[in-house]
Image (tube, rainbow, N blue to C red; front, top):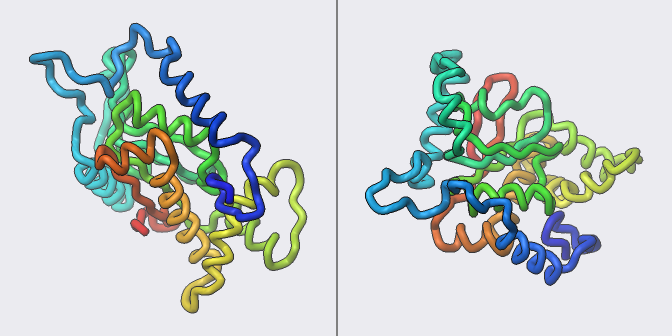
Amino acid sequence: MCVICGDAQHRPAYSRRSFLRTGAIAAFAPWGVGTALAADPPKPGAAPPANAIAPAEALKRLMEGNARYAANTPNQRDFTAGRAARSQAQYPIASILSCADSRVVPDHVFDQNPGDLFVVRVAGNVVSPDLLASLEYGVQFLGVPLIMVVGHSGCGAVDAAIKVLKAKAVLPGHLPELVTAIKPAVIVAERTQTGSLLDNAIAENVRRQVARLKVSPPVVQAAYAGKRIDIVGGVYDIATGKVATV
């Protein structure tokens, strides 16, 4: 079974051994040399990094920000303030894996300041090797205490997966590969007796990506098992602006 898409018939184009070998090489690569990494232990007497908070506190800040956004009462910001400091280092409180939909803008949805969120986006908010590597970077080198997978209402990628399964729709280009990662969620959602298939599949897809991240070696799995991070999911309602955890 593919650890990325969850499909029993699909095999990723890389082996687990090569993935781990690549990760080991990257761990010793010089890209972080000479850089003050937020995940490094603070020097004696130094203040802890700004994102040295509990995962529950990070989630609380996100949901409070979303409540402000939905109520149209966002915090007023001077975007030039702190710009010089941000040029030296970043201390995001959360990594967000969200859909690439143009109507989903995590910094706005959660009403956070520049530098507060480490965001990766792809249609259907599905985990892939490249996106997993980005999330690993956030955990290993930026010290994020929380990863949140954010789906959204009316997701076109999930709707496409439904059409492929139900109507045998044929998609162009590389879209079939994307849909392959979403189809297992649709199959599970079909068993739900209440609600629409699309809404249920969107929520199930988020849950599956969360579950997948929790067991994704080596970095994210180890951090989650060690309780250094939490991994949660939510669905953003475009019409209301509200995020509901799932």
